[in-house]
Image 1 (tube, rainbow, N blue to C red):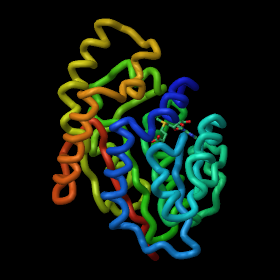
Image 2: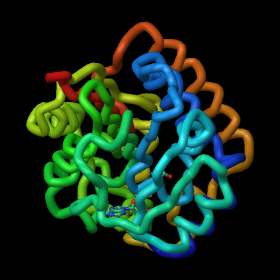
Image 3: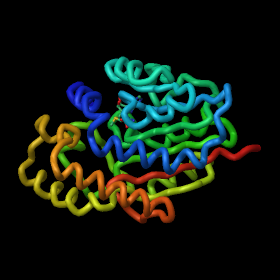
Image 4: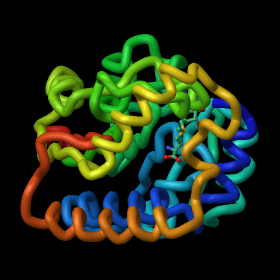
Length: 250
Ligand SMILES: C[S@@+](CC[C@H](N)C(=O)[O-])C[C@H]1O[C@@H](n2cnc3c(N)ncnc32)[C@H](O)[C@@H]1O
């Protein structure tokens, strides 16, 4: 990603509605599936960036944060004492087999650094302990393409089935899959058409810079209603898609 985008994320992660909502969504979805924390519990926030979506994991137990970008690692170090930042490439993780109780990966498989997302998910399946979880969250709706995708160096978006297939081919049992932020699909589709016409990709095209105002409060409130629905049901699509797999215990 562009360095300015990291600076925007670091500045916005506490107040931007999407980061607040995503941390709440991930906790609500993942925590009930995690084993109780013990002194040996270690998590991996893979491509954790500045820790904007995974810091709650580092507050539960020691969490290795892998990322390629040194600036992001520096920010993550200051975000939570529970983080152990490591400069690493997800395609060749510098960790032993069966090292982590859970692997979280939020918006990274979409990235140009990862020509074959299956290689990365196979790495997650290798480093997670038997019985542990691999949790993926990526941009959904393949046909939507916005200038935000250019700023964040996106190579692809995913259908829900794409994510499920990655989990299954990695040899994990699918525990949960769902769309999220379904209410953002119509406005994002409209923006996609408009940004193709305007063909702009300047810094203001990042979504992260837009954090204030009434629209953000409305989006945060609708996301909170959607989370209530997701406590009881899964959605077939969304501007984000999630899949959670568990490694079988031999
Ligand atoms: C959009 S950011 C997401 C960061 C964080 N997960 C979050 O939700 O805020 C994508 C991050 O993935 C990292 N990344 C993508 N592919 C990677 C790879 N193969 N190895 C290491 N880091 C990678 C980038 O450096 C960037 O920090």
